[in-house]
Amino acid sequence: MAYPDYAETMEEWWKMVDEKWDELTNMICVYHPNKENLFHENEMDITARDAEAARRFCAKRIAQENKITDIIDYAERLKNLRMAEELWTVFNYTWFGIPESIDCWEIPSFGRLCDLCSDFPIEEGVKVKDSGDFKLL
Image (cartoon, rainbow, N blue to C red; front, side, top):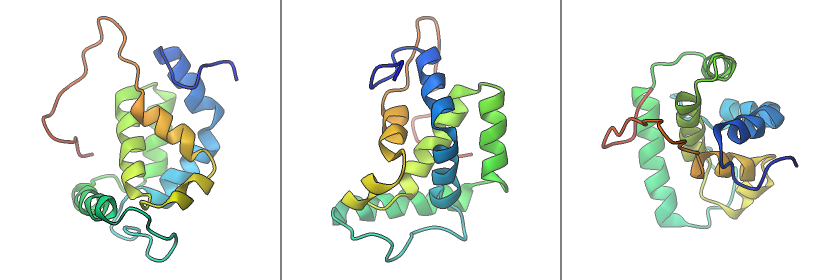
């Protein structure tokens, strides 16, 4: 790979997104919380019950307040316009849609999704909004 395990710059972050885009959009399609596709019952053995309860609470709230009708089209537009903070939010919401199970590591590029969410680079001079709560689409 041409980048470290974690993006240190926005350029590296976008490179990671671009290189795994097909797998990332598949995860968004399958796991981004929405009213039709919320908990993924019986897909994976839950290995962290308390974390799963918290995840379900957040996923339900995301789905209830989601205003996006076509999340894949929205994510594609964000990627094409290089709207990193907004796409990072979509990735984080998708992460909340994935069950708390060790089996999640079998999802193609799940580790990359985790890296993209956990290590969003804040470059000098860039201000990121602090909503005090997680931002809803």
